[in-house]
Length: 346
Image (cartoon, rainbow, N blue to C red; front, top):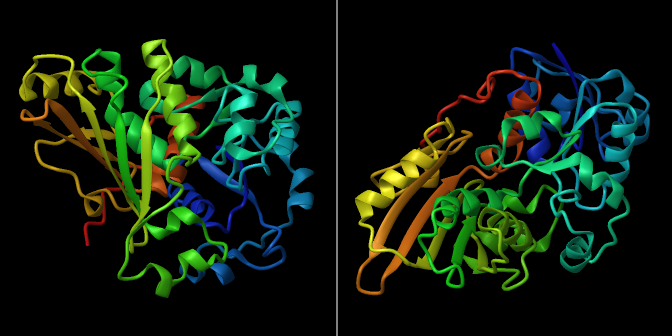
């Protein structure tokens, strides 16, 4: 039984993590930390847990003393808040899975550029891995002391584009990603832009040309091709609670048919339980509440462009579910343990 600690348990990703871990046969939550709600019962914040999880939340400072007693630490904190806790975990030989951004970029200068913050522990990068499980070696994940859990937009985009890049099927200078996310992607803290009256009956683009997940997408695509790749990525906010639909475009650099490209995708993901290659077009409602990524493909012969559509739940495959997937791999458990739930649909 793995002893688990969670920092940031009351955010949207944190509570989703708690929900999934409660259905995991081989994990036991030892503590949940939240400075905002320290001293309150978890079920007071999320009443759906009443009589199932009434444990009291503790402060971040109090939880630091308990890190040495666990096997794995999950961090569901804003960027800039994880690095010190990661260092403490490594010093105590505790595996840490960071759902935040602090260890996602392997170049500290990139972190400074995109997040406007200095990265304080460059010496720890060698102990970390950016772990989108379908694109990384299982042994590398097991051996890493620090797992940087990918961002939600990056997860949907990378899974859609990786087979094209790896198999040299597209013009690498032509990649455009148009993605749309539910409001939970903005987190649980109060923001005017996330208020019901601001979001409902509207759709808007944001962080145009400078969204931070762009750095992850470009970093990981560049590793696949072993050359610098840049992308044009535009996210949008849509009036739904959860889900991401990413539509990726690129110029084809091959004469392969749509059926041939489908076969390449199916072969690429043949060992990936959570990636489903569809003959139809994905919808967010079919992955809602699940750890699956659905992918559909079209070719526009008139413009010689390929269009890859991917759908995920931003709080599960884009956050908590993928974190548990990484934990399962790290501790040699079945990769799908505790995260096999199908999409809710309606």
